[in-house]
Image (cartoon, rainbow, N blue to C red; front, side, top):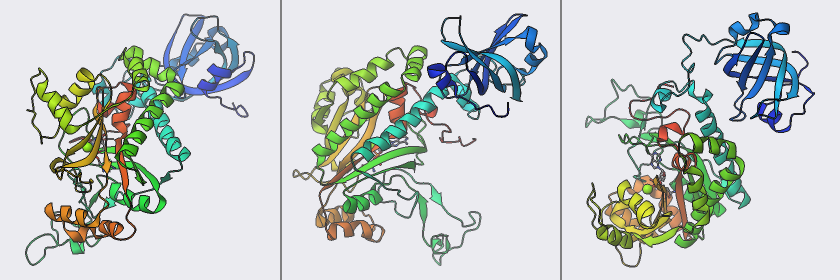
Length: 465
Ligand code: 4AD
Ligand code: MG
């Protein structure tokens, strides 16, 4: 095979010319045939589709087949020929086959089709080889690429915010501690508490729950920035929509008010969905046909409809008037639960919803206070099947108002002095939001559990791979 160049299966299927000599490499999905000829379905992850490799046993010998079982990795040299069978334009007439790695049929876990998603989570090291995870991972890549393209085309700067932080002011969730102290025997202060002054950073440190506060520092210099990276929350919430390690995208824009912020969020989500429909159709169609016959319709629906915008207070009135039994009772002031969000989106408005102006008590300290003194300029974007996909707000740019909120909430000033200084020196109106990347992927792929849209999920008691 030396001197032969490998072609990806995706390219062969799309552009390969019958009559040319080619080489393909990949993993065997299935093998079938009779005593004269064998057909191998080969996949290299470049596409959901397999290429058919035809092995003429009279010339190639039967010996070769012994190691070519489901899961084995092989390289094939041969000629691309027009396929007489239906379902594919071209196939490979094999001349020589090299086996790179066998997969014992008695022990290979993906020998048979139709495994449950739960079982596949237990073999996360192998599940990328299934059609479903191949499709999900290619779509995940496409969405990450589209995200960067969207912001780059608008002139936003990609800002890398730290994963290790000494600030826990955001209050977005419980934090994972980062320490090099001996946890069995940490140094103590005279009062008996752990002496973090002796820790690696000289203070207590954690994994970040959000890059927003640092993102704001960037926006107040570069005008428009975005972050995109892993985010960590140690809540013990074992739900189909929560991960302990998830990817968040946070744009932050100077000179944007809450309406600009909502416009950007809506344009952004529609851009991503449109990008998926334009570029991932093979994979989307597979997921639509296999799991969720309404997936493609739902994606198109989001493109075709304006998101409904209303205030939290208006939403509470709708929920109170609804003829519905709630697990979590509704009244003004409570945080909305998934059941409430999904009622608004799926039953009442039947379209994505943006809720604004939440009570300040249930939102973060940095959100801009409305003139009523009770609500803040928050905005949550709610999606069908998902609930909250984006959370954001206009930020409080007034130094004194921000400081009094910080005092009210008992946030130590020494933890946020740097954040406060941006309001002291050249403060500007600004806004931003956070998109849960896996929540987006739940929507775009139609998968029902967030563990199935990230390669290696981190959830309570789950950190194997
Ligand atoms: O609403 P959240 O907590 O907002 C923030 O962190 C702000 N700092 C964002 C900003 O204004 N820059 O989180 C933002 C989004 C949520 O809407 C949700 O989609 C997702 O992050 N998210 C999670 N996704 C998966 N697992 C979790 N545990 C998540 N927690 C939040
Ligand atoms: Mg939120």
